[in-house]
Length: 416
Ligand code: PLP
Image (cartoon, rainbow, N blue to C red; front, side):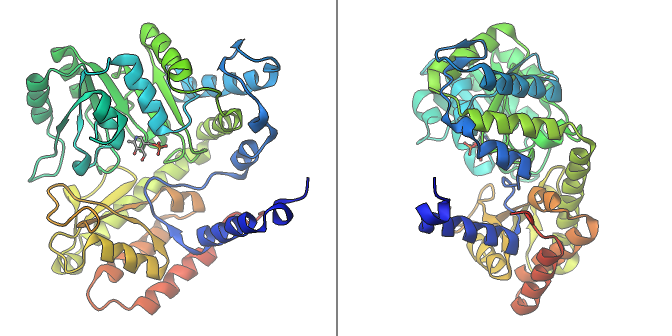
């Protein structure tokens, strides 16, 4: 029972270096966040030792009396946070939640219809190499080439043509809200089950700053680690008792064995915190930060350098910089921002003329910095640094110094 630094100094060093990286860099990967210490504590706990196949009160293992309490708390808090009648909090991750959803509501070979991966969709919504593209007959709708937005008339046309068993609404890279009511009416018209994957925007929904898909969808899946800022994991919601039963059996024994009880306890903590006023304040700062960034990247000097943002702005926690007309591509932008201490990911834009490893876009998100404490002044500053770095002849040294000043002013995990 020696400490990690003695048992495995190499891994201890990785942990130390990664903590240093998280402190020194400004994290703007849209799918990332910083969990509170209480979540780290629950997740790094003795609950990792426990086998608990089954569900609270109906386990296949003895000694589940305490982990049952944790799972019931996670379930009740998820239901209350999102106003759903049913929650399954066992999926190990977002992809596992999605595999269980399709397992529950479709048969292999059924037609599924989701947003094109290259237009901001997710791998689990029908990508060729993913289980979703291999087990199901996957079809996709794209965004409008002019507005870069999802056009519900196009979704309807595609749905009428494909007649999918499952209609999917949700995205990994799209800067606007979805029209859940319109998705519902299309699903009804073609006889499809409507599945909304709110992995990215769940925190905004929980805070009441984004329309909720729960009243419209047959099933809603999500991750806990993006805007919510909890442990890396997934969960599923529904208001339909029949589907709920199928979902439970699809998660276990359909897709998974023993649930990760330490992670489920950490989810319970995250859902508790998400009902607090501080959570709403953080989501509000997240949204304002993304808007400030979009405004700065569409100012005249940026536009003169061929920089734009997809759809002209944002309603959510991320901005998609459009570099199709810029001298630098997505890969160069990602590298330059890394050099000055800002972490983002390059991202294909719809109809991207550059290859996927290069791309003509960067996806920039504000959730992690909002968690770190950033408000309008800091988001304005970081937006200005980003705009300056993407411009020809950028002063990299001065940008690096500005980033360091921001990181130093908002220390991360001081107690660690
Ligand atoms: N669904 C959407 C919309 C996502 O963006 C992601 C993650 O990128 C996932 C599902 C998968 O989550 P995970 O990486 O936890 O498997």
